[in-house]
Length: 168
Image (cartoon, rainbow, N blue to C red):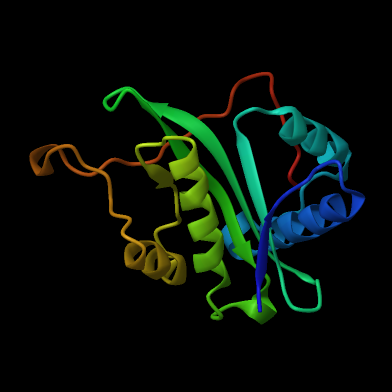
C-alpha cells in the first residue's frame, strides 16, 4: 500500500523525508550525480513553503517510509490563456521502482492540475531515460510540437550570470 500526500514544509518529518529523497535523486545519474549543497536546505524549505506556485507530493509505503517525491510548479500557457503545471522532479527510491509509485505521484500532480484549472501538464526528461519516457508516454505525454513542419520543441537552459549554485 502506497500513500501519497502533499508535502507540509512546516512538518519536521516531511522536511527530513523531502531532503533525503531529493538528495537521493540529485546524486543519481539522472539527477546530475552530485548532492545538493546542504547550505540550501533551509532556504529550499522556506521558499517552497511560501511559494504560491509550488506543489510537492511525498509517497510513503505501508511502514511510513518515504519512497517517492514529485515537485511541480504552476506556469502559464499564453496560447491557451490558462495555467499549466510543470513537473520539475519525479523520483522513486531505487528499491521501490517498478511498483507503480511514479504513476501514483503523477496522478496526484494531474489531480492538482485539474483542481487549479490547468490546461496541461509539462515536464522535461533526459532523452536516454527510457524508463521515464515509457512511463510518460503511457500516461499520455508526447513531444511538443505546434506543426510537424516546424519540428518538436527542445528544452534549453542558460545559467544566469552572477547566480551560482555549487553542485560539486
